[in-house]
Structure formats: C-alpha cells, structure tokens
Amino acid sequence: MELSDQIAQYLVSGLSTGAIYALIGLGFAIIYNSTEIINFAQGELVMLGGMFALFFINFLHLPLPLAVLSAVASTTAAGVLFERLTIRPLKAATPLSLIIITIGGSILIRGIAMLVWGKDTHAIPAFSGTEPILIGTATILPQHLWIFALTLLAIAMNKLFFNYTITGKAMRACAVNKRAAGLVGIDVRKMVLYSFAISASLGSLAGIIVAPLTMTSYDVGIMLGLKGFCAAIIGGLSAGAGTVLGGLLLGVLESLGAGLISSGYKDAIAFIILLLILFIRPQGLFGKAETERV
Image (tube, rainbow, N blue to C red; front, side, top):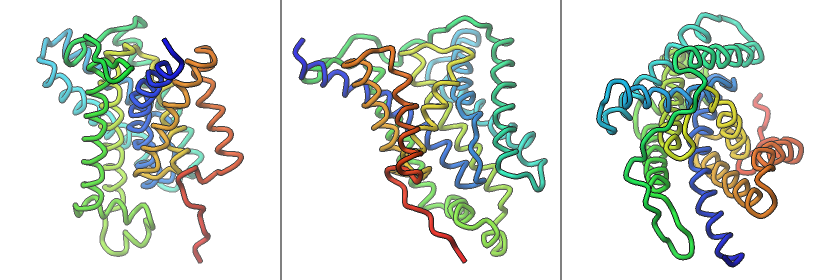
C-alpha cells in the first residue's frame, strides 16, 4: 500500500475515533459550563453505556434499537443519581473539592461495574454487519458510518436544544452567570441536574457506538474519559464546535501518530497534546481568552 493510501486510511479511522472523543468532550464541557467543575466520572458513564447495552442485548434479549435506547436511558438515570448524591448535597464546596468527589465517584462506579459484569472484555454486535466498505483508497466498516451519523445527530440535537428551547437558553444563562440567572427566576440547581443528564446521555451514546469496534469492559472508561477531557481542553471547554473540532483533531493526530510512528505512542500522543495546549494556549486552540469581569 502506498503512503498516500495509508494516510487516507489513517484519516478515516482518526475521524471516526475523533467523533467519539468529541461526544465525550461535549459532556465534560456542558457540566463545566454549568458548575465550573470537571466531572472525571464522565468516562465511567461512557463505560456504563456499553455495559448496559450488553446487559439489555445478552441478558434481556431486547432488539438492538430498543437495547440502545434503554442503555442511554439507564445511563442518563445513573448520571442524574450521581448528581443528586454527590454534587447537590454540598452547599458551599469549592470546585477543587467537587472535582475530587467526581474522581472518587468514578472509582466507585468502576468498582461496582467490575462486581456486576466481571473483569472480562465483552463484545456488542455491530449495528449493520462487518463487511468493509471501500471509499476511495480507504476501507471503512459500517459501524464507522453509524458513529459519524449518530455523532452528527447528537451534535445537531444538542445545538437545537441550547439555541431554541427555553430550558437550553436557561442553561446557557447559568453558564454565563449563575447568580444573575437565579435572580431572574431560573432554577440553577435544576439546570445543573439537566447538565448531568445531557452529559450522561452523550457519554453513554459514545460508549455504545464504539463498543462493537473496541469491545467494552469495566475499565474502558478511564482512557476514553481522559481523551474526551483532552478534546474538551483543545476546544476551550466550549459546549459547541470547538470541542467537536478538538475531538476530531485529536483522533486524526492519534491515528497518524500510531500509523506512521508507532502504535505504542497511541495513548501518549493525547497527553502530549494536552500538556502542550496547557502550556502554550491554556484557553484551548478554539477557545477565547478569558477577561476579568468587574
């Protein structure tokens, strides 16, 4: 295979992986904009999406579409429960203490998943077969097309919700200034709860659609969560196009690095990029520098 053909293949694979990172990164950004904390349990919600789908398919024998919807609903409920039990009871906690709580919550969720589903790696059936499709000089699996389609759908619905619904606009107001939003009658605590629900649903969708390609287990959320966080940082923690572009960029660079240099550096590339961004441009490649409000 010629170098140009290899690069085309790496680009296709990288964009598919980047779409997953973008979904996870959007979850981080939505919660950050509502609460000013980084929810490091987001990766475990991604894992729960795949594991719940496995449960509904293999144990309850539900049809795939119904199993996917049930898995998203179950993970969303888990995200709501997580907010109710860990974030809401704390009245005047600092962002740092809340971040530490989310780390503890992620460890707890991972431990429960290990006890329920065991340490084995599990496979979820592909949505529409495994016969490769030729696109130019690159081949792509049907599951990659599902990843692109469902990611685009989720991003479009996310944009419509935040721009054209009363609740979405209220959540955006809370992201700008929670105190001012509360003064005009917006229930800030309810908006925070909604942010956890939306974040959990996006994370669970990412975990479900990637599971047929990479399989799933109780500990897959750690690395996926960290890479989603990296995508959010690249995008300036914006719950919009910046994080999506950050995820796609990360996926492409990771794929090119693994293919052209060494697969051993696949995971390291994300963290090298993260460190460079934090040192050189802390507001992210696609974020605006913050100005102090007086």
